[in-house]
Image 1 (cartoon, rainbow, N blue to C red):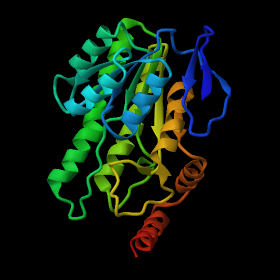
Image 2: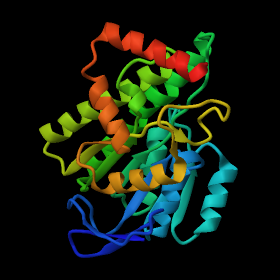
Image 3: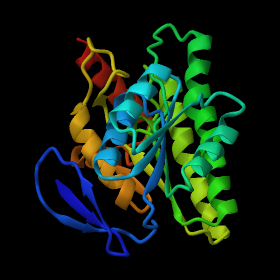
Length: 281
């Protein structure tokens, strides 16, 4: 296990697949209470991150739509987990988030992991809108509520959202997904500007993993630079605690997205089409 030290000398353990032992300084945003609310904690990266926070001694407020998965998580660590069934698309989700934060005695981190990826080769409008509603509108609903909570409670903390490298450029075979993740990235940037304008002790963090082998991905499909879920979760956990603005997960993806941003749009369109044919051949 790695160790992480806070500004006031308390420590938390960071589970690591590598087994290395290191000490890393915190950036000083967090109090000693160590309480986090995780939206989308019932499966995939959200569940893996909840398990890492629990192992590190944090108090976890877990939300999601799957009541059975929430009950199983709470049963696994009853002294560390409080759950609330919550749908990010529901109008009462902001109120329920604040209720959960208050029930925990306040929070230090809001971590947004809720999102969907639906394969839609026929571009069914209902499917495209469903992805946009959850990944973009649902994220805006929850991040604005979390922002208001930290602003009104005058708490020092972090709002962390998992977007995706898919949001860096449009992807022709998943337009709603890539566009919704681009929305997420821009929304986080805008909230960061607002936090600076209000001089809030609040850090906005955008975490951009590449393709990660979770239940979101098609088990029959190959993905570029695919990463095992456990490795990605270790890296995202560290970034949740230490990243200052944006964290692209994995060195290869950091290099690739930097190059993508330099490619003119016509060339990007040809490159993406060529890559699509290579992967699906």
